[in-house]
Length: 220
Ligand SMILES: Nc1nc2c(ncn2[C@@H]2O[C@H](COP(=O)(O)OP(=O)(O)OP(=O)(O)O)[C@@H](O)[C@H]2O)c(=O)[nH]1
Ligand SMILES: [Mg+2]
Image (cartoon, rainbow, N blue to C red; front, side, top):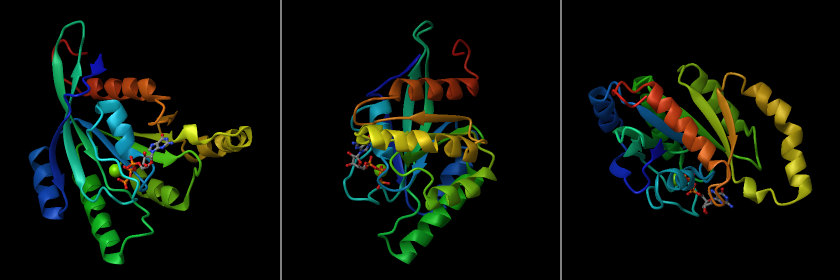
């Protein structure tokens, strides 16, 4: 099975609670995945690596994704030739230093609404920066998200930026603490959206998750 890159379609960008409530109420059993993480950790870049080159907008300016962007993506079962559609959510980051208080508040309300109303068939991919694991905002987010009981995987991205031996050793030394903190997390991956490391493994994990919740005949 594989994600059909290039077949991912942007459906809509949501920036108000009312719009989000309406969408989630109309899609109670939406099956799919959500990318969430601090600004600039590479959510949009990872989405582009996994779902096709220009699915999500990539930016050098943190905080660029100001909406919950919803996409439709297609997984193909090569043997049976069956195709199935799933939802992909690119969710605004948390822990923005640069934005105004009001914007941060609006984001929080959107996040609360998303997690309270979203379907249980949504896999949460929390993206973090492998150079700065266990940042305070990430830990606060984890305490917050734990209570919603969604299946969650953590992706440490930008591993290509750990260029020196000592940088890599530093991450390795923190591994026990990372695994300990994230005991409740089902999977931990190390990725580079830029170089492609870890991407096939994440793709497989996504497919395994969505197909578990799929009830289409011949798809499992
Ligand atoms: N070296 C390297 N750079 C990366 C990687 N992933 C993303 N970047 C760069 O990091 C910057 C931010 O990437 P985005 O994908 O826009 O980050 P984002 O998390 O979507 O950011 P927001 O939309 O602001 O929340 C861009 O300049 C990317 O090119 C990676 O794995 N390695
Ligand atoms: Mg983005």
